[in-house]
Length: 225
Image 1: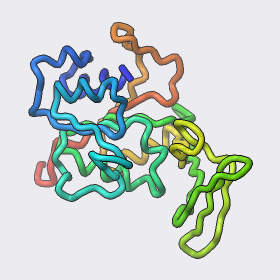
Image 2: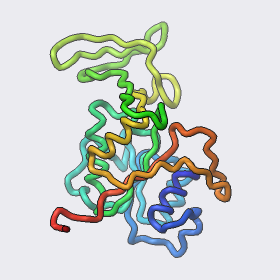
Image 3: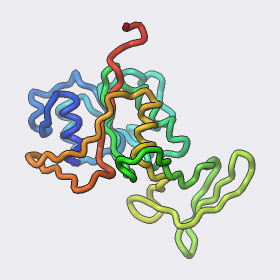
Image 4: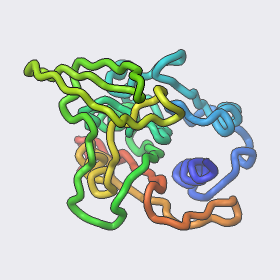
């Protein structure tokens, strides 16, 4: 999780800082996290106007259905390993993340992804027709029952959960190219994948998959030349 703070501070201040180095505090910089780890979320809230949000508890945020009053109010949004759990279509989540940000705002983002450096590899959607569904425990594990919009009934076994059996269901595995396409279609630009190491802050990436990134909202408005 040190890498998330590295990216956030680089995007906000132009250099990698520890949380304690954000001194004096900057209450003028406003942002939210999405179920972020308390280990950095709590101290970050003492340095920036930052609030950690959750899907199942207060303070609540459903990234697929944001409040219009929140649009264009944030300098940054942090989402770590959340979008692989969002119900399809996941494009809604990317679009709303962009809507939350001010011009020039930064989206700090990570998900598990595959096929780094390869083009035209689709995301592996586990439940592409998900609509009206329930998950039940069976003698062999868990089973998902889904009724599609056109009335077909589907059953899925071998479900993948993050955080333990029956916890948070994995909806998809992104590929790098499809993840970048989603960000671009949502209106982000200046997308940077942070695959380099920062040993001074204890960050080392031996592999090139599932590394975090930043994506910017353009500073230009529609009236700008």
